[in-house]
Amino acid sequence: MRAALTHRSFMLGAVLALALLLAAGLSLVWTPYPPHAIDVPNRFQPPSAAHWLGTDSLGRDIATLLLVGAQNSILVGVVAVGMGLVLGVGLGLLASARRGWAEEFVMRLSDFTFAFPALLTAIMLTAVYGPGLFTSIIAIGIFNIPVFARLTRAAANAVWARDFILAARACGKGAVRITLEHVLPNIASVIIVQATIQFATAILAEAALSYLGLGTQPPQPSWGRMLNEAQTQMFQAPQLALYPGVAIALSVLGLNLLGDGLRDLLDPRLARQR
Amino acid sequence: MSTSLLEVRDLRVTLNTSRGPADALRGLSFALDRGETLGVVGESGCGKSMLALTLMGLLPEGARVSGSLRFEGRELLAQDEAAWCRLRGDRIAMVFQEPMTALNPLHTIGRQVAEPLRLHRGLDAVAARAEALRLLEQVRLPQAARRLDAHPHQLSGGQRQRVVIAMALACQPDLLIADEPTTALDVTLQREILQLIADLVADRHMALMLISHDLAVIARNVRRVMVMYGGLGVEQGPAGEVLHRPMHPYTRGLLAARPRLGAARGERLQTIPGRVPELVDLPTGCPFADRCAHREAVCEAPPSMRPVAEGHEVACLRWETLGPKG
Image (cartoon, rainbow over all chains, first blue to last red; front, side, top):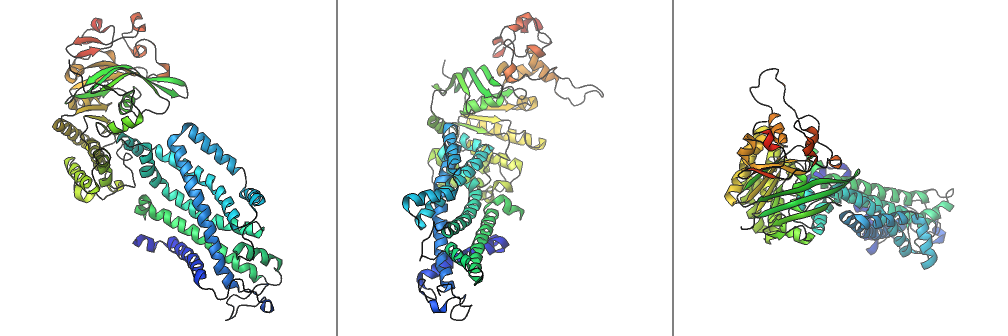
């Protein structure tokens, strides 16, 4: 615990990630203005006491939009990464434990899924189910599955080849027990680091999809859509692009630092070296 | 005649290698009973470790096994993986060569020693922990109570090997297989660890199969010896017999190749000419023929085990003509 508090990148990452969570949580109960309140006469306001970060082209309060947009980002990250974790890690562990045709099948399926860029999947899903937050989350989630499946299989294969697995088998443990008790904990740090990176990627991807109009639909606030709208007013009000950009960058940075810190802290071998 | 604890008949193992199928074991037969200690000696690549893995049912994927492997009269080769899992760690246990890597770096010592107990004996966490402590004290791990919550990296090599031994002995197995248990340890520790294994085996009336390439280790710690070459047992018998009156030219070569203290200065260490053949290239007849000084036309035929004396067998067609000291 003390190691966690003195680990600089972990603490910085944790603070940033916590700020993201708090922003989303706060927006559920309180925002400076109602998120959909349009106030056209007061558009393009500079930061002031009334509007901390100013207003956008429709006079909406930017601070409010950023707070509510955080909900969106967290929802996308949690669901899309969750999908990738559950299905991808599960398939990767299965491939590694069973080998043979199961491994072939999972890996070729991964290759097949990987061959479709997330954007293409999103466009395809949008064509079928219509644009929206849910469609974009599913598209990003599908993209995450092979990422985790490949990583898990590669890391798990390396663990399966180690002596203590043979020793565990010599103790009479079956493949399921070994996978859960020996393989998974030994690759957890790799998966956690990847999960935080994928969380950040998911936030970026959702921003990209919303920017293209495939993701979150108006009037639901989203950082990606804010960027999209800001782009058209780049010369009138460049600060409009700055706020969601900084929000995305800080979230991504925070999650990556958190992942790095967790990797160091979760591994007793690395902990010893510190 | 009552059945032995372990009875191996004509055991053959074929592995898939990049150069095609290779026979790792080519018809090995022996028996082992409770209270008996068998040493298996041979150079690297003679099939010693493969024998250990076969007895544990832990062969690499794609390996084919034939022959018979009976444990308390029950045929093991036919049983499924679930049956193997019930047997492994409970009735048959193994101590590995490399104590530095045989323990999971993420789990505590106490948990790892307690695991076989929880798995096979169904003990709860508290009872298993108490038993683990007792086991660690039995293997004379210093400060055992404090070490229960230690991680493997906090222990030295010798201490870890004691932990590995404690794990293997947790469920009071009938057969303990020790695959070069001291190779990775300091010479000063070797004797202590081997003595520990010998004491524990004797106390519990277990059967021990000690695998080593070190004749000195074998000579001191087991009663019976099997010399392996090219996936075959070439000579077996009581340790004293085999080491003092070796019959097979290979056994003689091994004994002559031992470094001796007090050898005259400048005297060269004897070696066996040639090298261990690759498993893929083994000759059809006597596997040692290509390196043997006494080779004759008759050696083209595969040799079978012939009795030399009470309990002493050799797989050499020419042992009689070679005489007791060839």
